[in-house]
Length: 487
Ligand SMILES: [Zn+2]
Image (cartoon, rainbow, N blue to C red; front, side):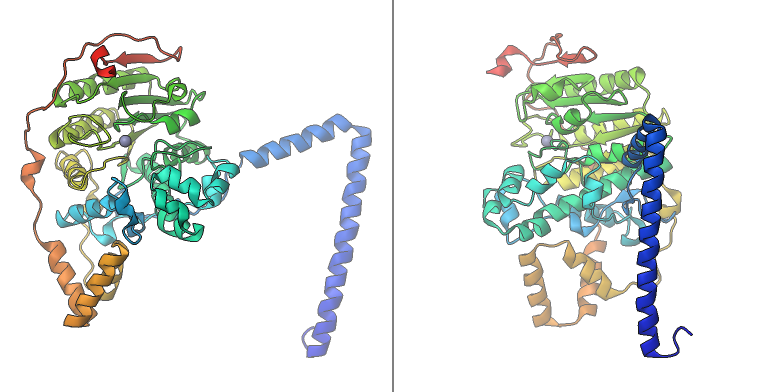
């Protein structure tokens, strides 16, 4: 009978709706009657059941898209052009090199380590994903451009409409956050992973700051605790020049997370409360150089791993320890940074512990080259490898249009406009542009000399190690600051 006539269909459809409504009403009345009877018979039983049910609902992880399927022929290296921040040159008002992630990718590509098809593109973290670590109130505050201007330390952002701020400033951060969350999972599965972004270690669940809008490190660990049964303990090794007060606040009373932090005590953020969460604290003075710095790293990474056996190490590999960095105020050379990363990977990987690296702070234009050189050094030493990706033959035919589109997404608006105008005036042919780009990116510009460049340490100030009372009863404090530095 159903579907013979349009009119009938309508009538039948309406009838079905009424039937369903009546059935639902009766069912609801029955359920309520049963609950009432059960409550009258045994009120405590009913209340315990409901409580358990709600607890289970809260504990259940939400459905996320961030753990994207990955091919075996892809490196556990995460990046996409959406990482880069660029809007009418506004990004130039901050000392942060907001395109460094794209340049790291380009350098690794030039060195023939990776290709577009052999790295992993993450997805943007959704609001539900972010709520795993953030409060609704904090996420709501990001709808005010004024708040974002404060976090990014770019005052003109305050006068921009928020939809532009969301798209041009916060969206890249959300992509990088998605990358960190995915990288942590891949590290557990493959032994190591690198997110060519992330490391927003000043942001905690309820507040941002210092160019960090989302707590990607906290999120990545919380996701693992929720979804990977093999991960019950995590270690954060934070070697950015600044104190990682964001994840420290988030894991303040969590014994599952061990935090080691080596930072310049004379610079931002001076977060005394967050220091209580650090289990191994190494405070540096201004202009600490290679020899002393690397000795400290060797000793304390070893000590931390002897003290605590994690199921994963999250390595915050900030490069703002570089000499002449205006914000880090330390004097570690490029070669020193490469050796530092090498020490961490060697010590963690020889113990068979998965390690996930994020690139965090680093504010000079030379930073991208150093990060790429460091990754290439790790590869040369066999500390990072993935044979299936390395031996994966390149695709037979590459779509030139796709390659141009991919490249243009990583550029700023003005440079894209300029390049498009130039290309239109010369040939106007996408095929030609594609070929030109291929030639540019294939040119062998890798400076191997940087890898083994042995610079002498500059600006070493004599340090004397002495113990300092620590705020945390469990913490081990290694304070290297002299009184002269404090002035
Ligand atoms: Zn930093």
